[in-house]
Length: 377
Image (cartoon, rainbow, N blue to C red; front, side, top):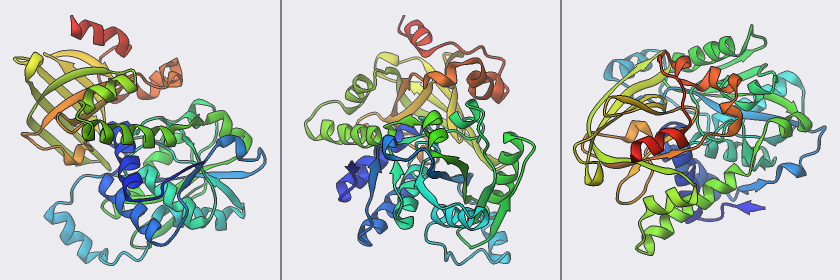
């Protein structure tokens, strides 16, 4: 059983989760704060192998829904008028699980993270610790995603609802039924948007047998391992970017400075484009990344390049520290790492929900192992 036992483990774990979050998955600062508070309260933060969950045990997935875009001054004023000032809820993911448990009368015996990301994954870990139930070493995405259908339960034909929702101000709601995943996503997003940010929600109420069918195993321990590798590479004087690429069998797609950043908070998502000007062996070249919470489409010198479902990850060029998109600013010196997607998302059904056309781009998905070779040439 893998454990988070100290401050160094916290930072290593959140670092790995942020890297695998591909620019999304929540603010890593929140993830660090939540884990630190949990350790200060002597809560146990450990990952349980999925094999140890009984087939007839109820499992649930708590997740964060909403946008990580910064609040505008206008939004802050509106929040004041709506009474969104005090934040009495300590763990919105844990409280969402309690709300769902109360509604369904199902006794939850294990927690599964929906995705990998700097706050969404730590939030699920802390929720499990507060509820005194195991957190499964695995997730339903293998990265971070902006939309609920972009998960393995959807690919496996499993139901998402009912969904319990609570924000940090204490507003609660239950989505009892939906016409489909997309409508459930829409309703959940509007609940989060109502409180100008994130809501804690809980769904994917499965027996252990179905959970194991959808799970991508051992991803939490992988995040801790890769976060630790980045740190130890720096400490040993090795190049952390090169070590990360090697460890994850990935590709160094680009190195450059962030020349422009354009973003907006729209429909409960953080949308935008980062434009990079090449340096080093990429001097004179340009790289663009379009994101909807997470990075999904890239262009090299104006031509479509790596896209979702494959992973586009931006890290600090020197330290190897991964960036959440909300933390990237003009002038940052960055490297872009590409990783191959979980194979299920390369299926026709997976590409239908996570390929470029889903996001409105007339671009045909090409596997990263094909396009990265073209870029090298």
